[in-house]
Length: 211
Image (cartoon, rainbow, N blue to C red):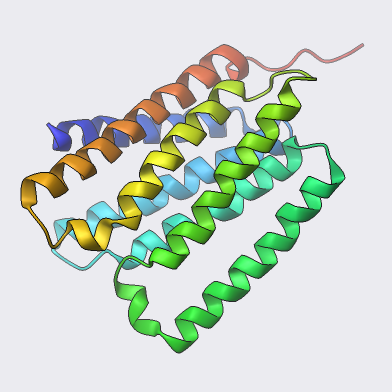
């Protein structure tokens, strides 16, 4: 069941990547950064599946996944959020986060081949905070990317819990571990469905040009 759900989510991811790139020239920076986020996920997912097919270690691909997700979603919310202090927080934290990760891998390179709990936390939890920032701002303005913001909070929170316990889950009862990873796959599938609905509702047509 988890395999089927994962495959459906993968094909939806590819479809979303194609659709969002189709509309890429027609919309502003937030849309473009979100499209790059979808594209980076597609590349990582294809890479992980290819390595898995040849029975090669693909854990290092998770680092690319989390870093690219953090980079493009941080820039996505930077463009959406209007309060200067919040924008400054996002930019400064990006610098701190990347510096911390570079130092960690320099002094402990073995982490490159397994789940890095610090990396998962410091690259994902702030995105939930940024999404919450934006939700509050949307109370006073046009609700752009409303569905995706809600979906991101749910998906990122659930996914973060699963990945934070990834190293532990792989070493305990198989059925218990399988349940958590299946839950993550379901959350990801639902997220891709929301991403598709967002495109169909708001971005499938070119915006009207003002006269």
